[in-house]
Length: 465
Image (spheres, rainbow, N blue to C red):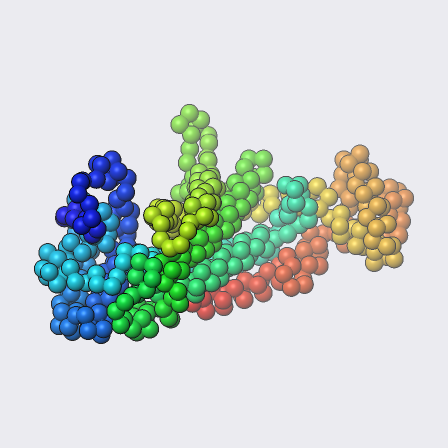
């Protein structure tokens, strides 16, 4: 394929080879090929409606572009060999070889500025559909895990210190909530991509009588962009997607951190599947949570892509500047990384196994029933602050005695918790503590089961992208 430039008439000498390589973007913007073919076809038909091309000429161009798409879908090596500056010059050169001088007329009224802005939105809308489906699949895996562990007691933590008993199902559903918000954010970003920049020209608009309303609808947009300056320079949608992806990775990283800790020998509450773990080249006994550690690590990479492009965007004058070429590598890497992490975490989730006995034993130790004991004193008539003070003293006594609160000697219990009207050994069982938290969003097994059922319905109704 030729390296013919789209802009060479004003220039006499050749580009410096190092700068030419530095300037070229085909190695990464080739991803926009099919978006480029689609918008070029729409532009040819728009030119025919405007009287710039005949209908026959427009359809001849459309046929050639369709043929090029089929050929490159079957064999992409022409893209590998091409010396074209970018995907726009690659497609135009290929079109000229196929239809001759007619191909050179396609660019009438169009700029690479509005081309790339349109291509990027077309490409992103398809990619967001893939991410949305990946989020759905991970949510479905977490809901299945929640259903299987709806009544499984587990220590809940604050400050990485044991706090109160929860259920493993409740823990899994917390991440479903986060990921569902992530899907909403992607949907919001997609909704704001419903404007079509094509027809904005380089910055000032198109001088030909292009019907941009029809053009936008042909490309699946709700409407054309309202301002040509903004249309070619807007990359808010890129930033929104980078931001939404960063939050997805933050949520995945938090889940990874939770499970890395719970899978450690110190906690020993879960085991991870062999298919997502690795061993040590030196220590034969090791089983390392590499899948989760990689997800946690890649979170920083995606956040870096966001902050980098935010910095690039912060002081760009209107309209288009070549700095905006930096949007694609950051965006493409983020999309690839996010999709891969969602897929791997779905696999990890399917293989997580809780050690029920260890989980129960862990939830029964460490004074996780202290808050419930204070509540029992409140029921007996004490103000909560007084009850809190009494239970704190009881915890000190239990630590000295080497026992749990429910096992305090009767004389100690009588002196510290004299108002208590029930036997804590019956009132502070793990099952009772969990069942008390039956309000909406609580950790009670029945409430978790209700939430699981609700989530199954929501997943069934999840929009098919």
